[in-house]
Amino acid sequence: MRLATLLADPLVRRLRAENAVRRLVTRASAGVQVREDTHFERSRAMPPVRHAVLEAGRRLAAAQLIDTADDVWFLTWPELQALPDPGATPSGGAALRASVERRKAAWQRLAGSR
Image (cartoon, rainbow, N blue to C red; front, side, top):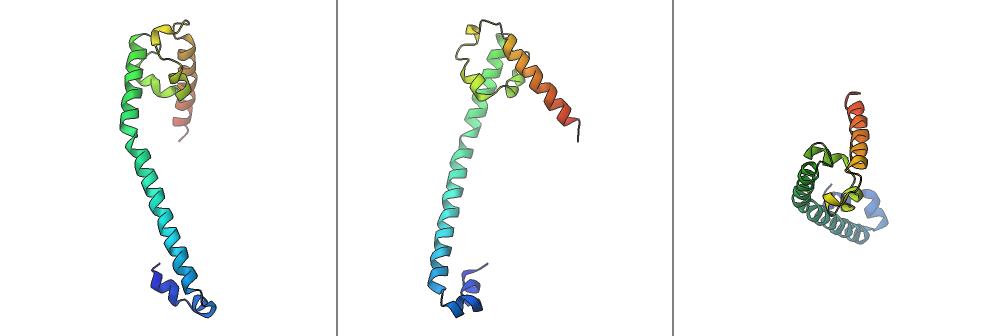
């Protein structure tokens, strides 16, 4: 809705609220701008993060801690952060594999329920 339409509204005119409406519209516009800027900045980080996660998956699969590099998408961020060195996992990846398999099975069940 255009500002002129809001200002011409009979209720706004009767209450003589034109200045209040202008202030509210200005504040709302500023809020939208902040939201869009925030969304842009968060979205801009996605490609490098995706690349890093894919590389982590490749390394975890090469170290045989998960079966395939794409299995990395079934791990949580804290699980990935807890693995600074894939070779340092004493369980040989059994815990990671179990988490991946459990989540992959749940994902497949949900995918089949469409």
